[in-house]
Image 1 (cartoon, rainbow, N blue to C red):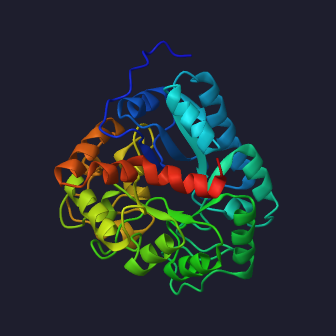
Image 2: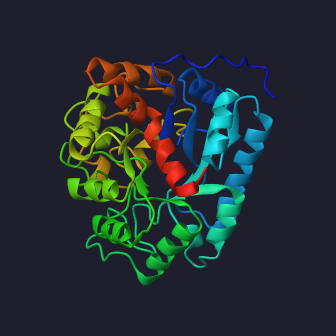
Length: 341
């Protein structure tokens, strides 16, 4: 275990903060920042979206080792009971999540293995098409396949939480119609406020809410604003849009902040999620301001700044009970509804 001091978590005006999608680098200094930001639990993207099942297991094993070596800071959680215990112990609870199901598409029995290993949240697709359905960059979106419908049924049976982030609109609509359990968009903003294929239309937001689920408003800059560098204000605009659209029980916080050592150079970032990256319809339309140095929104460049989000929402005269739901309470409710206690 590292000798780096374990700081006390930030004091905030809410009793629980859950990050609906976390893709930060897994390292001790990053989890120290996470603790400083007062985050009690997070949905960690524990496998790479395009990896095989074997490579995915290897990624999981590395994170398992990290958690074991940093058990003073964090612990895995697979239930609400474990979430509450981690918070009581002052540790960050880590939920294993995946942003694609490509690594199980050839054998859905592998979902049982993932569930037994502790994975609790999965997307059917990432940006591209797989054997289950289409991601948001695929046009036309042919919708959920027969295998995809089997995947939905298995996810429901295993009490694993379905995540529609990155999923094409037609495929997402099919999943919403097919599921018997609540589902989420762990990191997705309102298309009505920012015209990005990664954002979701009001009809989908309503569909998720009608099934008892929720949407996590996120800080990925191309999903907030294009013409100039966004800040916390733009994120709060999305939160308020969703609150007005579907009510206080269906909106959450999600960082999607590639903090730490995710990118080792500006060139690597540019070719992945920068202006010249993998998905030009998402990042290619950004203004000249969108550089490596300015890739994160003003005021939220680190999870350390999470308490400022709480204060920002309160300063907009959003009642404290609603802020508590947005920052963590709604996530906990959906987790309980799907996983049980």
